[in-house]
Length: 145
Image 1 (cartoon, rainbow, N blue to C red):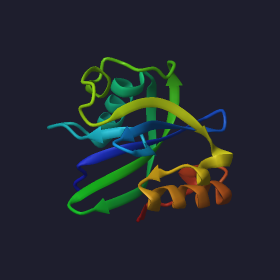
Image 2 (spheres, helix red, strand yellow):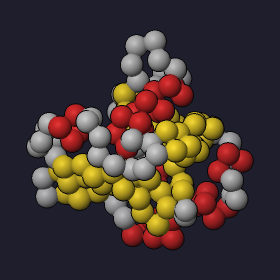
Image 3 (spheres, rainbow, N blue to C red):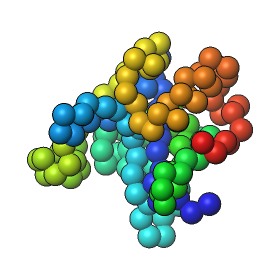
Image 4 (tube, one colour):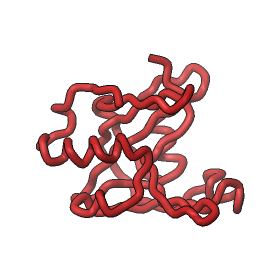
């Protein structure tokens, strides 16, 4: 499958790493990640995007979800957090104010995921269900949502 976007599912200390967003009057959360660049593998893309936007080093372990929205194909990787602390970086999300709303790298407790507006909602619902089913998300076969 040709992906346009790759996303990371990073869990540390029973919290999910997310990007908090304010866009107009809307307040929501998204999985870290972004667009794949020319000649970049999908693992390289998700690793680069998380480092650029969150300042943390990760290791992609397994692609567990694929999601299509219009013409956009997205892949969601379970990733290990290797090192670093979440912070705003020099990424354009932070350096170009009001470009596309406001951004804040953060975490949300796994026990409260259903209380948050996490996009895409199909992936969020599946993740919540899978966290109840699997001790290790890499046990999950890749599914298309």
